[in-house]
Amino acid sequence: TIAGAVTLVARHGAIASLEAVGMQDLEAKKAMRTDTIFQIMSMTKPVAAVALMMLVEEGKVSLSEPLEKYLPEFRGLWVNEPGASPKERKQVRPARPITLRDILTHTSGMASGPPAGAADLLSSMNLTLAQAVALYSQQPLDFQPGARWQYSNPGIATVGRVVEVASGQPFERFLELRIFQPLGMKDSFIFPPADKIDRIAMVYDLVDGKLKRAGANILGGDPGLYRKGAKYSGPEYAMYSTAQDLAAFYQMMLNGGALAGKRLLSKASVELMTALHTGDIDPAGHSPGKGYGLAWTV
Image 1 (cartoon, rainbow, N blue to C red):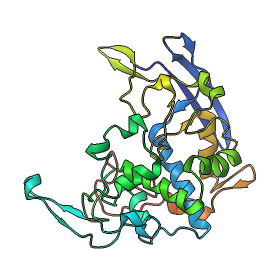
Image 2: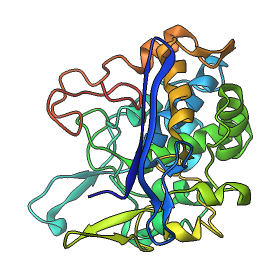
Image 3: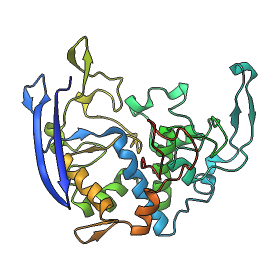
Image 4: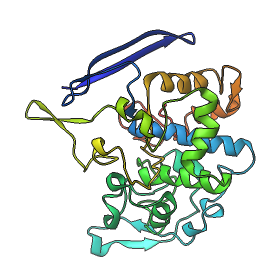
């Protein structure tokens, strides 16, 4: 049912098992390798959140301040009140402004995906992050901030845009300089460099019991085009990475914010991110028994 896989098991800070099985590219008959590079999709979200928390620690951002303080385009939001039909639905003002904490816990009320006018954004990647978030800022919220849980890709995209504004750097550059390089994540990036392309795994759909190369409609577009011409840095899904790079990132979190003498976050920030923030909101995750911290499932 899958073309191949890389598995990594680490314990007490050491890699105990690293294996590759199957194929990286079925058509080219290219075997999976332990250093094969994958599109890690929504596993990008916690990386975006760590980037934001680094700026929180530097005093450039506050989780409790209104989002509009950092992105003025979010001023004057409306909230859709539930109605029997779209024609009967009314809009009201939010009871309070949305905050970055709301966004990181997926309780902001922001929509699950892009609006109808930009429905193909996540596959075409044809807008910049600034342009996309400006578009998201003009959409009404689906519910009052903090009222319930709804997984929101535009929300995490907005986190990435705040990182850009607060740091003065493109989102992908901030990740490279502040997270990937210190942790030795040499095979992690948003836009593939030419010398890494031959190690990127293709993406397949299971159709009538057979594996078929995914087309242009998936996140990131046609996997065989390697995002050529893409503009969108996709903080919610756009990272490429390897098993070993992700192990370094996760080990940093398990260590309380540091790895190999490089500290990205304080232990207090790691504990805050991985604590339960959604309280009695139910459901607050993709399956029973789960809640949310700051972009981390708890």
